[in-house]
Image 1 (cartoon, rainbow, N blue to C red):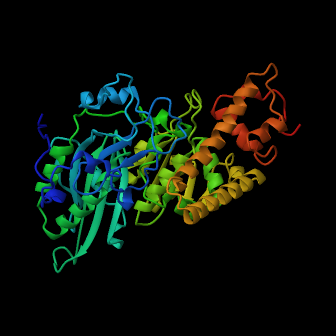
Image 2: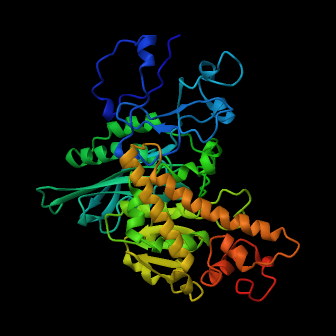
Image 3: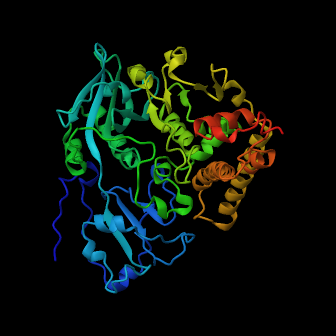
Length: 497
């Protein structure tokens, strides 16, 4: 049966089709080792057994080796496919094994095209008279008011290129900015543009980074050439919900999230480039432990930095990773820790209503808007005007011990990768799991204490959480209040008795 293609007209990366290749024989197919590696911008996907194809020439297929249901989750080569995905697979019949036992031989690669939730594509330009302007967009009737200031950060004229993650209403966006010198008096010697997209989720935006970078350069050289963007939108467009908005959550659901080791949130694994976590650790050093506590307490964290802002957006992402908890029921009653990525003065009213978030900005005026944030991060300087939070900025003995362990484990991992050629273990996985396990340890201990006839926190139970009974006492009090464990404090000084 011949499959009919539903692809849109050729996109810019497909303008020169490759030479037609002969159909491989079954013997030749056995020699295929797997999908080509993703580009360096997309190496953040480190989930065991999963590879994201983002190489030019393909729509971006998620490829997974499928194992038997009895295969251990500790296997790094295969994971079981959830039944929910089986139901969503457009050519399900082609993937169903003849045995009828719901299994596929491990050497068979199952592919399906993931739905691309792209809801808008746009071009923003800088006009010497009017400032930032929305030059072009699809669909034409979508409300994109304010996107011209999100896609082109304040101060961007100082850099030649940048990329920006942001929130726009119920959607997430990614824009690539470029600045080109031109011989034009009208443009004052410089032409600046951004090409961006909006999506219902930020987890897949990185897949289009190369496309957007290429398109913004094209727009600078030949303004007004929108046909590749039109073809892209026609190919990737998503049907909007009836109300035109989508629900944004800090951790959108995924049917394969439970299949990953340690129940790791997939959206916390695929939005960063290789080395993002390593740079985050090196940049903040021990201050990571301070950010960890503030993130776990769901505080409002605002990160300031001059352009370029792309790397700062990744710091926002890394901060979100610090607060992961995989114990069912924990955190249901607390505010969601929402990543806002880049924000500007147009977001002031929105941030004023948020109970918990982490965001970044290039606008220094935010420093004076103290009601909008609990914690202000300027370079490596983490500070707060909240008297109740100031003691949390001091590192405890347990904090330094945890950071020492994180550093040692990271060095061992890097050594293993260099000496043994370990390409499976990931620094990103290690970073996420380290804090996930720390958080689970705390809440598991709290649940156990809460279930006792006399729910009293002792020095032993506090140490069991990996905390310092004295240095972390205030943090623990904040934690109990935030997550509704107030009833555990039945003595005046439970941590110091």
